Length: 367
Image 1 (cartoon, rainbow, N blue to C red):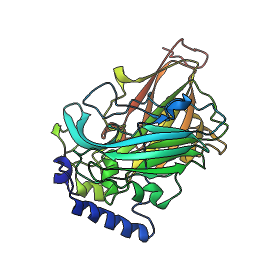
Image 2: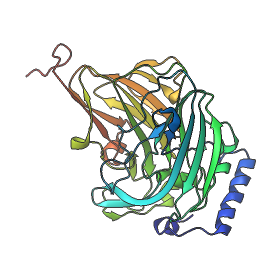
Image 3: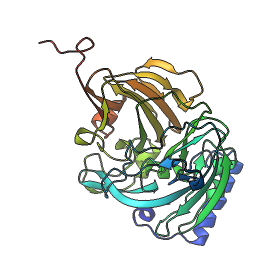
């Protein structure tokens, strides 16, 4: 579990794997703190025989060197009134990929993207989840899913060595938006490197309809080299332990969804933003500059009455947020953490470009 291992991956021996497993079992026995609730995600398809849409989807932005998940690629809302079974596979990939213009980093990912694919199911659905690890990976991994009853949220039963595969079954009994993440000893490093995502369990009646949806994940990245450095950057344990990162990111990259790559929407539409805060250490003060959360569900608690007209919402590490916006005027909405040094000096920013006719009765420039 050192930087040399992760930046120059080698297959982990059986002895190393058993060491991880023993440490994990010990920590679980002391209250489940370390192998607590962290996650599973997937390249999922709902049962093909039913013809239902995929329950998990996603993918990096259209750039083979990037692991930044495209915020517009997420499973569609669920409109059915019956339960289904889903077969989902989550593949662990340790990859070197673009961090910012001129720099790259060794990420740990679910299915080659950050955040991991969004899994979307309905309350009452069942899931067979397979966790598979590429033989080229350098570390053991597992998933803790906050939407799962069971030891470590499934973490002990999904512990895989490079080249290995394990499978669990679970039923989604309580609705909400929940994080999933790697829960190995050293999970803070694994999550920082990108191993987190969201599972959305829709209530039986579904969610209020909107015109568009987007999916983001915030996390901090701890590097030896400061923000703005070029070349291959390396993980740093000193800044991790002091929770003083050089990077705070949306979807694993600096400015991947700004300017010409901003998300698109239209005047008059309603949009929904799903955000999972991987951390591992910092909370987000999530704010849409130029708009408000018209209705939102803190902690992803979608069966609670929504809060209304909220400017900034705290999203703790290990939690999720669901928020809606109305789009009455053309503008560029900037999604930020209102701890603004993270925006100005650490890389956290995404934009939604809203196109359409002006509405001078609501907003206009004068002189």
